[in-house]
Amino acid sequence: MGSLEIKSHPDLIVGLDSPDDAGVYKLNNDTALIQTLDFLTPVTDSPYEFGQIAAANSLSDVYAMGGQPLTVMNIVCFPSCDMEEEILKQTLAGGIDKINESGATLVGGHSVDDPEFKYGLSVTGIVNPDRVLTNCGASENDAVILTKPVGTGIMSTAIKAGLASEEDIRGSVAVMSMLNKYAAQVMTGFKISACTDVTGFGLAGHLLEMAKGSGKQITLDTAMVPVLDHVLEFAAMGMVPAGAHKNRKFFEGLTSIDQKVDRALVDLMFDPQTSGGLVICIDAKEAQDCVDAMKNAGIEAVIIGEISGKTSSGFLKIV
Image (cartoon, rainbow, N blue to C red; front, side):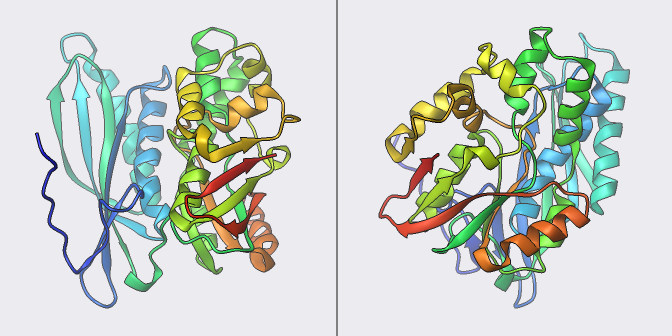
C-alpha cells in the first residue's frame, strides 16, 4: 500500500506533521480547538483509581498545548462476560470525578465488548491561536522545568512483582491521578517557549523530541530530577519495564550519557510514564520565579536542565 494522501488546511495549526499528541484547528482569531484522545489498560487494582488515572492522562495533552478542556467523550472497551458491571461503574466514576475537576463537560462516549479492558477519553479543548504551545519551540538559553516526579513505569513493575509497599502504591497513584491543570494555570503567567507532557517515551525521550523539534541541544541534569520514593532501589533490582530499554535503544543515536550517571538512574530517565508531568521550556531568567509560583500552588516543580546550542537534528546530553 502506498502512502496515505492526507489533505492539510490553512486553519490547521498543529497536525500530523508535528510530533505533538494533540491537533489544533483555528476557528477564528480568538479561538482554536485542541483535539486529542487516549486510553489505557488498567494500571492499578482499583477500578476507581484506574478511571481517575486514565482521565487525567487523556486530559493532559490539552494542558500541554496551553489550553483548557471543554468537552470530553468516554472511550470504553470492556469484557462484559468476564468482569462484573460494578468494575465498569467504578472506573467511570473515577473518570467523571477528574472530568469534573478539570471543568470539562462529559457529553457522551462509545463502548465496545472487548477481551481486554481499556478506558480513556476523547477531549476537545480551546486555546487562543496566538498562545498555542508545542514541543518544537524551545529557545537557546531556556531552562527546563518538570512538574511531577518520574518512575511510574518501574513502580508498576515492582507492584506486579509484589515488592512495592502500600505507601509506594499510594504515592504512585497520587502522582498519576494528579491533573496537570494546576501547573498549566501557573505557566500561563510566564513566557513559555515549548511544552509537552511525559508519557510513553519517558522523560529522556520526550526531551529529545523537544530537542529534535527545536533543532537544539538539551542537557538533562539527572541529579535534579524528582523521583518516586524507592523507585531507584527497584530499578537497581532490575524492575525495569521492557519499554524503558526500547526507548533507550530507539533514541541512542541522538543521546550521550555521562559515564558517571548510575545505571539505575539512566534506566529511570527512559522509563515509560503514565500520566506524567509537564516539561516546560522557559526563559532562564523567569524559571525560578515560575518554579516558586508552582510550589506556592502545591506543585513540586523542579528545574532539571537547560537548552544550549543549535544542532540540525537535535541532541540530548544526560549528565
